Image (cartoon, rainbow over all chains, first blue to last red; front, side):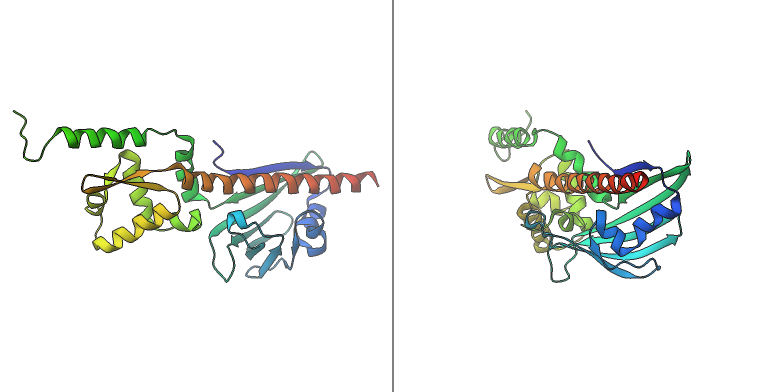
Length: 150
Length: 103
């Protein structure tokens, strides 16, 4: 069961060059999404893409820059919903850049699905609950009100 | 259908799902665990039902709640969606940076 979103990537470029692709709107758009990002803590920006009605997602991701440590670390909140300002996904995206073997190791973490992660395990479990209820029903039927365990 | 994340964002509803993960319960016995009015409990139960987290069965005079997979599956689908999303985006970034190295 997948319970955490994390991807890492090694690229031959130096961290400062990779940083550009994480923080310059025109370069970000090349591989991520159209956006109005600025690498300033507190900056509110948006990512724009196509809506996914199945997930109650109107195509706009609302973000606030939380941490900017040039060429090392970047994090922003990541919120989305069905529209009209309603937010149903409230999560956190963190980028970490580490110099390695003459290049850069880039780590992406998308977290904050804590509750979801906690409950996701249930979807992996199979049934059992309905047979439980039938058992209870049977007990109720077998035990008339006022009966004693004689 | 209400969004699954929003449904479980509420602590009382999370608590209800925890209680139901142990066994099915009547709405009345569920209500005994909460310091809130019976209509308030019913409202939460209705939301959980509407989002596919629980089933409600009438047995005799009681209404029994049991966990249902649909709501939980929706949460998992969202997480899987983001996982695939980032996997694809990073592949694209890797491709762009590799092209750059060659030029």
